[in-house]
Length: 153
Image 1 (cartoon, rainbow, N blue to C red):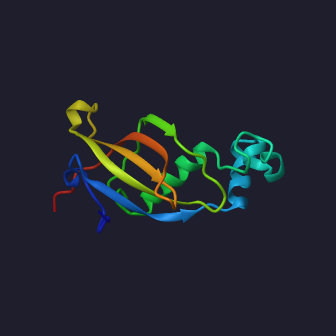
Image 2 (image 1 turned 60 degrees about the vertical axis):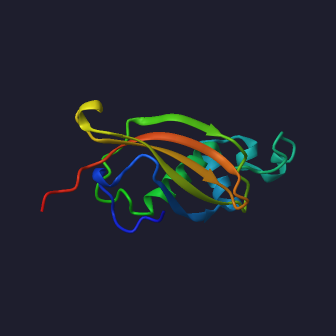
């Protein structure tokens, strides 16, 4: 489903799936991220990458994770209610992301936890499936997000 307006804790139910828009990664973005955060040849040097097991330049896994969070953030779902996250529970890179790949994400609501379970903060656990233009899952990531309740008006 598409996000129509900012969401609050009360809006989330286990089983909901939210879709993001798309983002295409180009060679320059991959190289810039690689040079700054993952300086290995298969992220930074198209020619050297040909000699690696990938056979081509590929995005760093954490770049894929960052793109995924950016895609979900741009839906506006947590723009008024997000209060951060204690971290990632599970992260798996399934396929390499190459220059020219167009990514999108599905955000599956897998747990809705009231404050007493999460140390005083309401929590929503989301499993992200990041897909490429061929509908192949390139990454899965599960993370707990702390979410505000809807203000009383």
